[in-house]
Length: 403
Image (cartoon, rainbow, N blue to C red; front, side):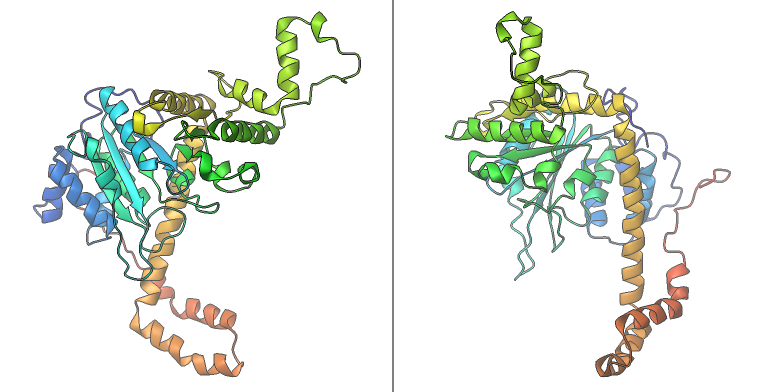
């Protein structure tokens, strides 16, 4: 995985690139799909995304074929409470990046009904403005009961879009609360969209969704209360950073009139955490990133360029500080853990003998002669053969080329 800038040559932007150009030599449907995928066929991308999203046969091979190409796209998570205007802002950002000549993939996650299991998938309807742009690929996904604001396969779908050669991947979550924070682990940068109705100043001090933001925007900023919310967030950021007031002199005997302008401004910042946070957020090359708090009215396309610029500054900070590589390595680590968990669940709870054995322990559990922990230990011991067999079968390579 690379962690370079988003500036790419024409060769590197070719969907699929050349790293796996000789991967498949068979003539199976999956091989033909990957060949069309590497050729940049939108229909092949859509089919590959569907296979990966639903974990159909061959999804591991599709993901494996893209793995060496990951890291070229910037992944931007967009989250916030319901009704904040996330879909509209996502659409405007997509249009902004398209005007800059970049290709965009959008993964929009909708909540699933706990009663019917279905989802409206209405984000695509709200993104009509860019839906027909050939440089934009939109996939709406249902959470299917997954917590955290994302669907189970969201990160896998993002990998497919990255491997296809998309420059920007926008990940719009469902309307989140204070504990649905998966988007911060799936994206390089996280944009939290709030509205004046998001809550009072106490809400801005709570842990959770407010702590995952790399950039804030107060959307629908033409409504009353927008400036107050922005100031509350900046106050929270200033207090949280711990940098304010630590160098402030004792207030007795301080004569502001006799101080130089720079010293006077520094003292005022020290006494005003919100002002200090705003000033720190405007630094071009900060040692520590302070999330800027911006204003936007996405429906009128106001403030969108400023949001995009702040996201670009954050990406440059990640590159310069080395944090981009750290975040992406952490994402790889979590990915391996997810795969292991998925395989364990699939192998254990879809094995008829294991389920029959578990049912046979219920009488002892009910009588109290066995405890769940002991049953779990025994189950793992008897299931070792299930857990150790290979699950991933690589596609054939041409003669003389190692896997």
